[in-house]
Length: 177
Picture 1 (cartoon, rainbow, N blue to C red):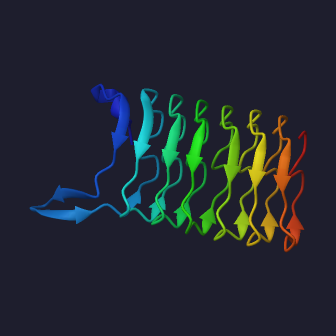
Picture 2: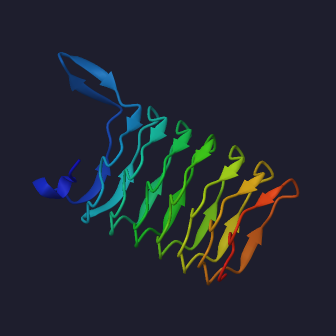
């Protein structure tokens, strides 16, 4: 549960597609809960196409992480996966993403834009709470629900594209925008 900082890791992290274990090679399909949290020296991460899920708090509080590309194999990004990644400036989400959990990008102060892929139907609560540099949000036609406080505190928000099929915008979704 501790970050690579404890062994002097810094910079770019390339997660392997396969790892040796018990005399064989095993496919990496998930970045586990708390896997790389609080790794303050991490600046970027490369996730292999074998990964289908990113767990709760996986990159939580990686304060110098500035870019991440989520491969199209990823279907789920769980709660608070990138919360407090305060220098995160570039996020490319999987085009096949189905689950975008709660608080995924909360307090990612440096994030300027966010494009939700067409495969997402529900935007979790507190998704980008407090992202005060977020200027543009693109929400696809597939989204039918925006969770409570999803974009609360995004005070720089200038452009938001809301789909025609949206049926529910929960409490304070755009408060203080």
